Amino acid sequence: MTTNDPGKWSPASVGELAEVFRAQKSASTWLVAVGAPDRPAIATCRVIHTPAGIEEHLTLALGYTTDRIAPLDVLPELAETLATRHNLTSMLTHLRPARADLTTAPRHEPPPVPFSFTLGADAVHTIGRAHAESLEDPRPMRLGSAVCPTLHYTLGDGSDVTAWQRLQDLNSCLKARQ
Image (cartoon, one colour):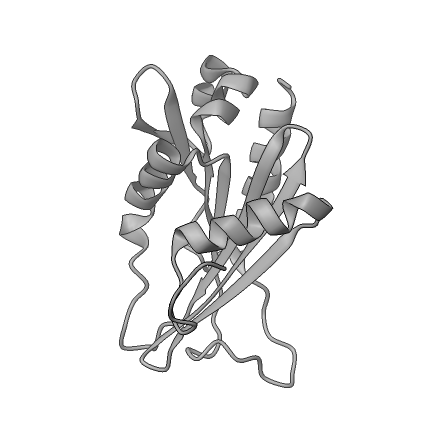
């Protein structure tokens, strides 16, 4: 990476690592970042080189204590920003009760429960806007451009496991048009 301080990085230097050095070998790149003790977070970014170009697969986990509620109301705004500025293809968010520090207990813990699913504008176009917007349950929220919208589907409150069935039904309905 081209940085003068080994303790610092920049998006350009990470991009250079993934796109120049690793691309020469057609190798994928997997980056991991962690938060701080007062703001628990773990993020991964996997960069894959495909015939169509470069794909990025991101995962982000945030830990919240019982006295801090996850800001779920900002998800539509986040989805819109990712779609309009970063070409979001799709985003699945889910919740699960767990340790706020994101460590895993040495016992069975409940799986995550889907909260929302977002389709980026290109995916909406591929599926067919009229079809993707016509679904009643869950009813999509239109985000971004009126001409090329991103669609955000709320699947539940993050605690009801029937959201898995709603996600499966949504996926089936959307795939039926592809």
